[in-house]
Length: 293
Ligand SMILES: Nc1nc(=O)c2c([nH]1)NC[C@@H]1CN(c3ccc(C(=O)N[C@@H](CCC(=O)O)C(=O)O)cc3)C=[N+]21
Image (cartoon, rainbow, N blue to C red; front, side):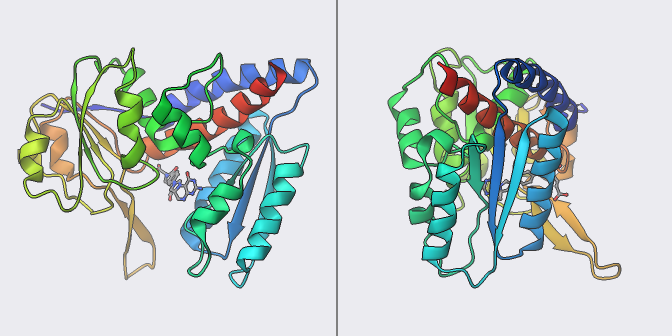
């Protein structure tokens, strides 16, 4: 069997077209959504992700502001930059690019973000709303990679109601919250959360209809682990340095041989990553729409 490709670039293009229509409607009533990114230090991977986010904004008609602080910035410096963004009228949503340089208090900085402007959906208030199941006419910001996964599956017709989902990884941005989305009423999947210390990982994966691999261990998930026809989402991105030309190859958490067993597979690059970026834009547009209610 050759898995159907869960194409994040093509699906993101569809979502961008929908977002463009929402942005036009907002402009019609005098509102321009705006995203700001706050980056501390100059990690090359973060720089490339942040650039991608600003390109996406241009395509959809969202204004964007780039704030950069040197790696030597203190907690007080970062906190002051966050307070400025909380107050900036033209910024309807913003993110603090993670990871922050060592020595900065990541948790305190995330908590300093105005929950109404939290484009990542990682503020404790918004994560708390997700746990509580608070849903309004327009949802509070949801974490971007989990919604990217759910959208990528739903828009390819992968059945989730009644599906057994095995999530690998317990990190803040994916594993810890994706189960809350997948088990919502109306989505109705059953979720097992595993991680790097799960003794019998392969056994858990073997019975899953949907596998979400988000541990950051290149090619961890083996073809023999996969139930034939299962949907596999590869969320991991590890940069492997290729010595001869100095370029970095991107490796996912899923072994390429999985494509011969799975029913659906998201590629790296071009899968969950581009979808994560559009879900960030969705949060920014939704924040502007919510402000009008
Ligand atoms: N506050 C915060 N919010 C984040 O959402 C956040 C973060 N910090 N820190 C880092 C991670 C990682 N992340 C990615 C998003 C898109 C791609 C992406 O679009 N990847 C492309 C490849 C891009 C490349 O060439 O490197 C792809 O998969 O096709 C990758 C990684 C968001 N993160």
